[in-house]
Length: 361
Image 1 (cartoon, rainbow, N blue to C red):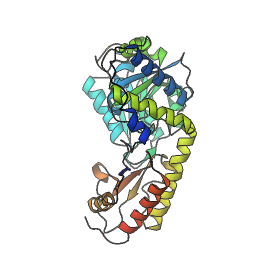
Image 2 (image 1 turned 90 degrees about the horizontal axis):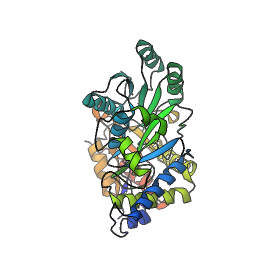
Image 3 (image 1 turned 45 degrees about the vertical axis):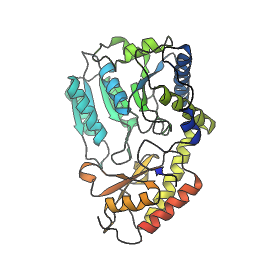
């Protein structure tokens, strides 16, 4: 039985993406790898129709967190200061990164289930000079899609630039790179783009790298960009993951690109939410607060997460637990990956069956 992953990455792969990893072994110093890398960069720019004169995808071997760490350490200059906006695990992780590298920073927080408090952000911006604001676009702790229009307006007013963790939104939600005063946008292959784990990237504004200093070796975006622009790479990449990523981006384009994928995820999440509501399961957030990619649902009385997870896994579906203080209250469901109509119908029926009787803990 096919297992469908409903966690927020990695995703269930299509057959053609899986098969792409069986392409011939390839040395990363050969011109064929340079062509593969350049093709990936070109396809990534096409996702948001980004101008290659202004924007450059810098490819990395690593997880989404590697891309976020590279973005923060490479784009905040030594004379800079970053304001980190937290309303979930991944905003808090950016603060951990800043602290570990000694980046001048401050953070503002909101409750995990709450939106960004723009008034709090503005007070912080008035209290000190910041060159950057770092924020998670889609905070998968809860499924919230943060308001970057409002944050970008504050950035413009106070002369700051945005650094966006778009790990769980790139390829499925609107990202207005120029309108939002963005310097960097970190993302990964294995979420909305339907690739495999091990490949990530930062879409950087080229001019933003000119005034930064080297803080790391492996994650230094300036070094990666200089080599990638001439068809090379400073380190060994995960070639098979890049093969799969290449195929996934071809699928993405053939299926209609950004807006088609967004519509697909919206439709899936709408049907899942509707069935769960019919089963008496309430969402954590309103529909208009969430990303199309993932939503959180409150565990109903007499239904513990472990038992629900086990029952669904027996039917071939993997859901995701809540984190931290929400771990006993919610479960999460993602719409990403190769999920067919029959798979979706089977999932909805599995939810109905599992939720029809108490499952305990």
